[in-house]
Length: 583
Image (tube, rainbow, N blue to C red; front, side):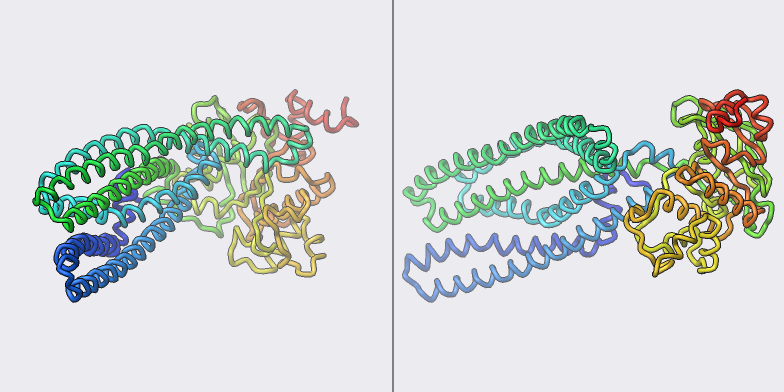
């Protein structure tokens, strides 16, 4: 994706896709403006020549002319607004598409920099601000300046002395608007930050509502939300106060100018230097200028919001994926029986500036091997398996698949040979079949059934009248925890992956089901290399190699029996779970 600068983001890289419409919308708005500028002049003629001379024909003719101009103005306005709405809505769609694609392109290392809440707010609220801003700019970019300049020029033609009032008032108005806008912009940025925080607290509370109630923390969470909401509302009130001050200040200045206009205009009429019709036209132009200035003030507010949202989205786009495909990737032979060979060579890895989550890890896993990874919570077990599909890149050392550094493969190819079951079993809204086809979109029913049987999920799925077409609710909430886990395991096994990663995937399964699962994987997927991350020693006692991890360090590597003899941490874990075997 092309890098977007702050200017390009909303003015060029998206608008250029609709450059014809982006030209026509202001153009038709300009035509509407021209029709409006002529109306006061015609009204002045009606007053000065039609009404004063009691010439009905002149009044009717010019009245029809005003009507025609109004109809044309309405037609031009409708066309302009329709084009502007079409452009702004389509740009909103394009930006959302690009944000979604960009987020999905980022590695876990980049996504860790943003919370889910801020990504949602940038994708929804900030995009809406950009939509509204672009629509307003397209509608006002010609109308307000043209009306302002046109009214001022025509006023000069009518009477230069009275026009001096405009020349004095306009800079004062611009100064007031600029000063207040300078105060409002940083407040808008603060509002966005506080909105992210408030939304995040709400999301956490709703997601973990069962935990909150189980620990009777409703009062604590309510207080936490109140504090976040107070920060948001106090900033919004401060912004609203300055925002509310703008219109009265402008109105006061305009009213003072109107008084001056009537006073000096009356003197000019009495002196015979100005006709009554010209004074009415002059007042109309002044009203138009006042409306334009107010419109420009509102436009500045909208543009400020647009700029604040643009900066937030641009910040997201400026974060680039650190995990890239190589220029000359190694082709993958998916039929190669050795494709499951995985080798870690002196691998070190850390999250950001934190201490190492993995330190000096070296081992080799051959096709058919079962690699167990065990350790306490936060010891770095999942970090090891996250490196294989390149969710993160190693800090030093290298990982090889089939004797080639994984950085020499396309990321898509690496993940196509891996069947991954994450810690948190996640199912997506749809059917069992649609979820089973995530790894292999063209999977047959026979392949799905095979995977369900290996994952010990076939029995309960077979009980549903709809079978594979049984509905899956949001997050798979219509299944138990153990059923969700077995379905996610089955999803990873569809299509016979060469590498299987089970990241604490059997935590909700009983020991008997867990044993059946491991036996089925060994017999049905004998050539696959299996990585099992667990806290149960019984789940990996038959593993080819067991890696014991503690606080980011590799304590020992060996078989179950070897580790019982020489590794204190492993033996403590095992005997605490199997008290009957304790010596």
